[in-house]
Amino acid sequence: MIELCNITKTFHTATADVDAVRDVSLTIEKGDIFGIIGLSGAGKSTLVRCINFLEVPTSGEVKFRGTSLAALSKKELLGTRRKISMIFQGFNLLSQRTALKNVCYPLEIAGVPKKEAEQKARELLKIVGLEDRVNAYPAQLSGGQKQRVAIARALATDPEVLLCDEATSALDPNTTRAILELLKNINETMGVTIIVITHEMKVVEQICTKVAVLDHGTVAETGYVKDVFLAPQSQIARELILPKSAAVAEVSGGPVLRLVFDGQASSEPVIANLVLECHTAVNILGADTKDIGGKAHGQMLLQLPADEASCARIRNYLNDRHIKFEEVNA
Image (cartoon, rainbow, N blue to C red):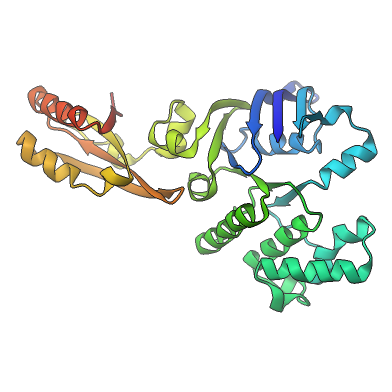
């Protein structure tokens, strides 16, 4: 549905030229929930603004349904943007308008009759769970409610793609989960392709099917979320998935292994069996299990004994049972 072909965006300053995005190529399929993740300054927001040409790329090509956005007239581009809606971290609601009137706003711009616009706005507010707040002003709404209004407004033009630029960063964890579930439901029931820009791995894990990891304006890694989570290939992906821990950094003794496991393996007593069969004790430094795509995926940091013979037995045990592992403090 969306193709980014060698996108570069350069900003010219008084002192130097800055490449916010460099040679980025991505393909987002219809129905995807595609995550773009990276640390602050990685170029995520610039890239998402290039997708709908709010920022015109310095070089490269953006295609929507096979058509290059650069080839469109101004009028055609405005029509295309109605099919690529956007929601923001700051909600961007009009403070002097009620929730209903905020959702009506893009319909008014499109020339939809008032009665028809209000009827559609009420239906959308019901979809996002705010049918009882249609006459509330933004100042009377919580952060989560404001974002729900923003989502309803973004859906008013019947978009095919929804761009979410750090849409949950200003929300508390419980509200974040509720908003992500709402977006997932919109994707499943309305068929809207969703692109999520975030610096939080937990957002990607909860909602996305595929992910691209950005690092200093370039794509460091891309793939299915499960694959990237279980076996990150780039250094930046490893930092996002496996944040550095002081407890791990300060350990002394044998090597530290990172074990990864999925649904079936996560329910087995792996460590208990390992200790019994290898006749040696190990130290669990940390463990984490996440729900990715409805299945449990986990990882564990395990410190091995100092003697090499015990380490060899443990590695052989893990290899024999096809349990993925890697050394993390080598």
